[in-house]
Length: 143
Image 1 (tube, rainbow, N blue to C red):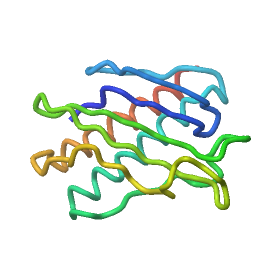
Image 2 (tube, rainbow, N blue to C red; image 1 turned 120 degrees about the vertical axis):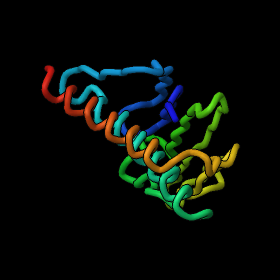
Image 3 (cartoon, one colour; image 1 turned 135 degrees about the vertical axis):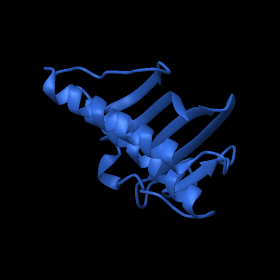
């Protein structure tokens, strides 16, 4: 399983960020506060849903914290697309502020457009997570 696209809307400092990722390697380099950890944390949140759903159908993952919603915004959205065995898998996670009048009717709810297939092996997801951790470490080590 490989991540092909990631979109962040009103998540932390990313008002509207759309990334199309290389299937082999992606390295995030930038000064402090540029959003490297924001991208990796968003991926970690989304993958927690995938890992937990592989372990147990209907299980939940990490949610977006209210503190992660960008200032002056009523909600945040993370959208991720992956490919596995030539099958595209996309899912979204949204969080609304408490008491906010938002068009998003879900509060830390996952919107699954396609079920994550059971043939996605747990080891593939863990490998993907380790790959992201290595990229994160490289981002720290290479200023």
